Image 1 (cartoon, helix red, strand yellow):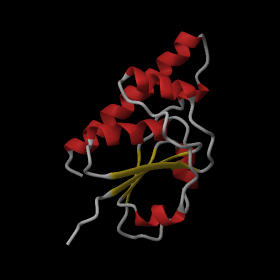
Image 2 (cartoon, one colour; image 1 turned 90 degrees about the horizontal axis):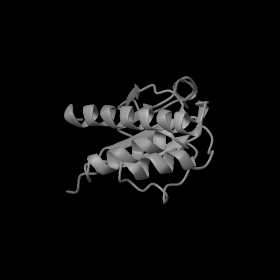
Image 3 (cartoon, one colour; image 1 turned 180 degrees about the vertical axis):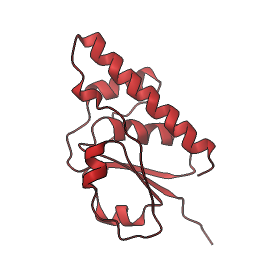
Image 4 (cartoon, helix red, strand yellow; image 1 turned 60 degrees about the horizontal axis):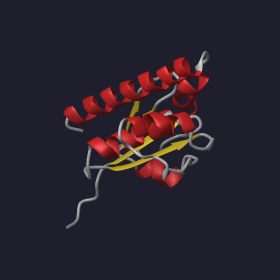
Length: 142
């Protein structure tokens, strides 16, 4: 009998930065161990700076789409992981009682201000923090 892979669903407000990076990192580092998806309360489109900093890390996310949370995926997920407080507070009700829901809070790099280099520095810091959290997730044997 074929066993389906655990589904990891990363959620954020706009599915433009943090959830996209988390999806990309887990796909890259977790190989084919998971079905990895991301979505938002709204779809804001891919943030070009997120695309750029992931490219710097050797991961191309240009083919990703910015999607709105899909109730069926939400309720089939093994893990639902919110990456911002707004998504954590406003996540739709999950009817699947077997889902593991976690909140990994990261600052929104899209809200960074300053020079272009200062803004990009924030994007890189969030990218690296998300990678470290994904590494921790994988090391814990989930």
